[in-house]
Length: 370
Image (cartoon, rainbow, N blue to C red; front, side, top):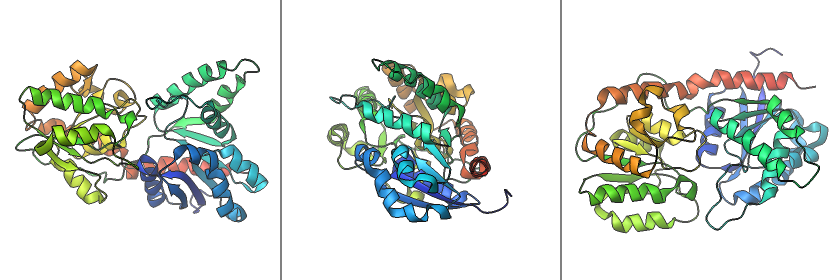
């Protein structure tokens, strides 16, 4: 195959929202190949894993032969899709944003083992697998062994090796420019940014508890709550609307990307308290636009944050978070050189700097076609 030829791919995204949507749009826009997105709204994720494959097959089953390859989000059963498509199915790349073996359970929720098995069969049926960070890939395979060992007998221990043979890591691209960006100088009352999803796995309880602790110490600040919200407003945000009142500079998702970036350029710092984060596009975007980060010393953050800033911006526990937060709020109008260095480091994650790697993977995927 001539790598210079334009190939045609179908992107199946059953949960078109948040990082899933961001990734699909960025890849389709920047690839030298033609990528057509077929998606479903970002809601009812459990039903997407159960039924999205049937919906997608019904939509495109007759046209599969016209595509050179398929890119699939991980919240669907690829095994079901390929069973329906049969020999007409072109080679498939699955991109794992998260997985159901390690995803934290919502309060009061019990684990549904079937979703874990769906991840396993999807991975086994894929021709190529990419994880969005090394942290994610390692945690998946650690959990996979433990998950399989829960079976009372006839454990498919061979599955882990088969999946790992076709697995790799490639950070998602981010939808910002790659050139030099000089963050604006910050002035006035410090503005804290929350630009994550309004969901339990981002741990808003701890985020607001840290802000309340700073408030109790008499430290002045403002907060912009920009993240995307699905279906209903979680209780911690409703409570914060009352407890923080005039400190809230923005309460709600900013759909326009330029306005969103303008908020980041006003922000003094971005905080994450997540219990689940496999890359962290929102944190990368905030640092790219000049926000100083406060991030937990776990998950993917030590992998994403340049090592020289680890001791300054990674926290060990809640007490360490509050201490670092109060210290940073007190000196938040400085740090121009640090903001610039972080912004330049994050430029490596722009789609302009990532797309050649993705196109190479897609071309390799098609070259394996029988």
